[in-house]
Image 1 (cartoon, one colour):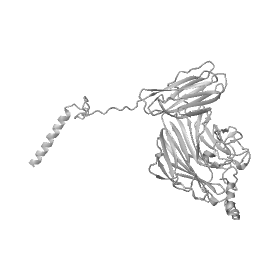
Image 2: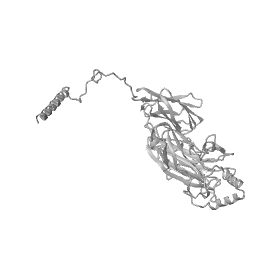
Image 3: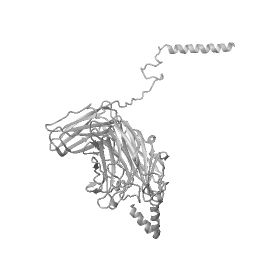
Image 4: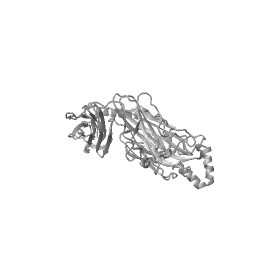
Length: 540
């Protein structure tokens, strides 16, 4: 609900007393809050290795005062979990927002199993606008998160301060390891980053725009991609739906923090010359022809935003993000919302040299196209990463004409986990991936990746081959392949009925490696000793 609607409701319900209520709210605007605006600067997790992350969320806004309401997040962890963090967030209306409120204790269960009471490791709260307050809670749930697809449920989450109370929902971020993944750095940062278009000190401590948040990583001599996911919620609904924008920047040296000033509405001031606006999905509300990334349909409650990764040029050392709320029509019609977490992963090494590569087919004046696999040998059920590199080593510029299709054979592969492109888009449809690269300038290199999981029933010694086809202009399609060798699958042996000896027929009876006469001889000596002891006792 917008602040204008809140004011109208107060006046309609209270008549002349509504003016007194609004005056009280104005006079209490300077009362202390339990916590100030907190940009995403808390490093919740950071590590390097054969790592990646997954994230999911669920909204819980309906019936926010009913503790029986359950929010269930379904999360598929395709490797071994090494860290996991649960987030829950809400909004309350508290006159003066002098503190208190919220709900830092919830009940948690996995796959409908036993319920565990959780108390948040960290709480973020702040006055957002008028007497609204945002609440964000974080809890380490590493011990509870499992490999594979499971349901994680939260209940007994209550935001109960009046009719304006809202549970935004629950989010879960898990980091996992897998030998087939490239060596990467994973960073998760969190905080409470509210933004509101009409913000000014008389009604809200929140800035108009979000604060900038950055992650740093070691430089690399080649270009790569920073994969990232944002936990965002409470995006203002319409009609008409309000607009906003996401900006990002990479660079060298110390991260700049903010990419533009957080207070002026329009135009932006001190916008970094290297900042780029991230295009939202086609379904986003357009502003000046650019769709907004966080639609009210998906982010009125808590949602996860995982766009195509951010390209990182060679030698860059940081990636920064900032949300702009704005409108070309009126300062009051930009979107407001809450940004509470950022997960990111970036490779730390150049791709390994091809180990098992298919033939490279290059026609005159065509870009080169190669493919390799890591690891070249894998066990059934293991994750395998395929990498393709397209190099335009010609003098031609290809305009909106480079397409790659990769069809994964279901005889050998159970699923496609991830597909990325350093340029363009990657679309997964079942066991098929379509890459639309678009333009390629002379000398340009585009890297495509595909992460698959082998079937668990493959036999040892099998060879799983993956083939990709590139199409450029009206030239004939060309294909390249790479293969992974399947290692020792478990072999079930039939159970033989053993003879009375307890040994399989023809098997040598194991006496600890001693000569066969030692055991009966030792038994005889033992009997003589027992007999001697018994005789001595009778004489005494």
